[in-house]
Length: 348
Image 1: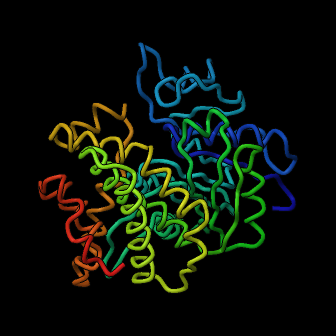
Image 2: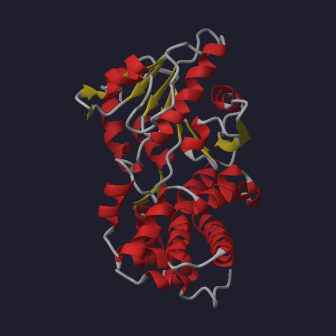
């Protein structure tokens, strides 16, 4: 890319996508290595009788998913995902993981030569013979090199420019620094690692633990219980990563993508909030999701489901009692109080 500038685009425009668009839109204007305009794919919908894309492009605010935060004027909302990625060389994926395959099928064969991708998506899928990470799906479907970005990054706090850290997993020594320059801000510190799979696994698995923390909150347990859930959850995350991937580095779990994101998600975030409401109200998850999240999606329960399938295939469900309990509460109508079942005898 030495002969031309990098052109970034965002595939997704929810709460987190819009917060990242604010950073990326600002950064590309400050550097000669990036083109100024940033396309952002927006699923078109009506808000008070206006197209959401028109609102963003006129008022420079995503009033549905990130109200009160102004986006840079060089961030352009685009309702067609193929138009969004045209000529882009850095594709930033930031949408619910269940939509990735469908989006890839639409843009496959329509991406600029030499492009790469970075996934900010926290989710996993079951695949024949094991686990499939979102970055792997993108690599397979589009033939791109894919980096990942995960961290203790609650979108509203990032958008308000409250200091935090994040981790980028990138195998390329050449591209890592480019991505760091694209995403880093005075309030958004970026660390680099080659340990891509562990970074991404942390981003997905921590949402299961956040559900457990929410169940405990709904039951009225205090800080001691939550601390225990966080510690046991971290150990199960590490054990799971070692079970399914070689070359996992323990130090990665102590980056922002690991313990920091786990702590933040267990005290804030949508998975904890809805899980608390589930225990208190006894209402179905899908009802609570629709009512409480304003169009956003839970990641913890579907990730718990996929993880449970994988562990079942290896006859290893009971080695991960916290993961098992979250799955059973979300999908088998187990009582919320069962979140602590088996933790006394846990070997982790």
